[in-house]
Length: 197
Image (cartoon, rainbow, N blue to C red):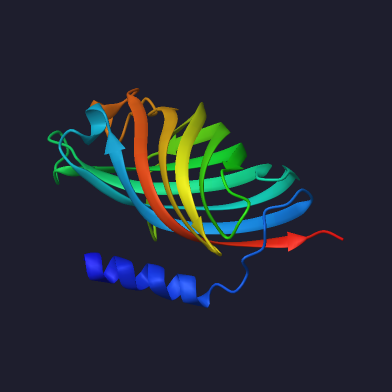
């Protein structure tokens, strides 16, 4: 597993061709994908999932960017009260964000914070006859502090995502209704910066 991870990072770094400085007036686009793990009470029996996001950032000054982000995660977790022993939630965030890069180079550690609208939902089950089990959801305020490492166009990031509470459910995940929904995500992404001249 470690060899695979190192190989992926090496390939992304070699493919990356833009090592532009992070100067005021630049626009950056980023897409990320990775692993998600529930934290707290919901994650006590084990959990695993996928997380991804897309964002746009504008550097309002050297090394400091603000922008917007859409994130999504699908996470399954151990649930003793489920007839199959597992349950799942989806979580989507629509956030404003800021990132500060410590170095104005192609290689830099960074910190960031995203905050905005978070929606936590149960899956919907359908058949040819229609909806068998409807989606149930709850909209909350969410936020996500993160740390990362920029290596050319490749970015590694770890974020702690606080998404509010789970929906009060009548059909699915009844035992996990109205509980805090927080997850850790570890992602790898590709970022590209453009000068706006």
